[in-house]
Image (tube, rainbow, N blue to C red; front, side):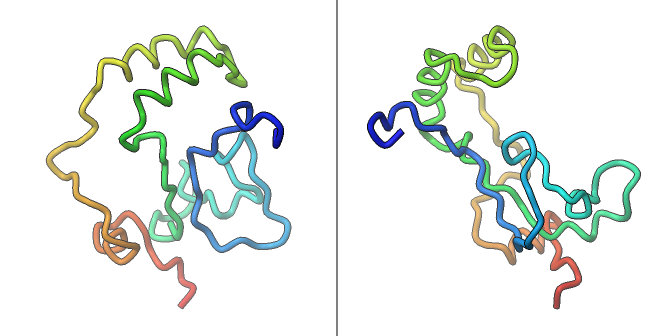
Length: 122
């Protein structure tokens, strides 16, 4: 890809986690193995063990042009046609904010909002 950067993959999710030997991502960055770090899924222990968050850059200001480019490339790992309605909705410029939206200030803010815990590491 060094000779053709336009064909390089897009990393639109940046996981912030304490990496340990033996951990692997499955399905891009959607799932981490071994499964213990994903323990907030249904049937697992209490959510106060959430100790990481995902910065999802898909929703940054350049979303519209990036979505148009990705639609044209059509290189989805799953059903390409299924992404059409997704791109149509993005092109309509939806407002992703709600009454509880706020500007990101740092990890302590995420902890105060209950979106993140220290995970029992301290």
